[in-house]
Image 1 (cartoon, rainbow, N blue to C red):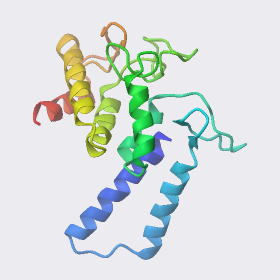
Image 2: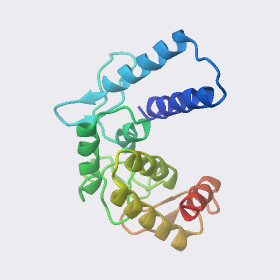
Image 3: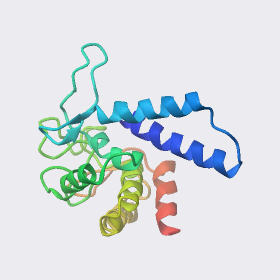
Length: 189
């Protein structure tokens, strides 16, 4: 799910670069890009109103939500109704809206652990992707609030790898380059 969302956005950047260079993108490549967007659409579960990865072997959705469920915002190819549903999950204090968002696993998941690697902590590189999507879908206030809360974590943690979404405690490696990079990007706005 995360890889496909990022890949879709990268494809859109590729098309923009080609346009700037006045280079032609082969029609076969456009068709493959459309298939990737269609595949992302097939990861939506209408009953839980969430995106999930799909099991490669049995092709069933793996219905354990994670921060990857929000990355279709970054992909930019979902409709505004689904974007609104994802934003609601960011606002939900029991899901992706703890005091220091966005946790890698929602708070109401049985897998949530605020200190366990990718099973609960907040990663600012993921926040950067989500913020980009929020801005592009017109949720500028949500994006600004997430930037502000993310920068507060950096102030406390000296560019740590990840953070406790409940307390803001810095976790993982200190002086982590992607944390520093996204903080600089936000400060440069």
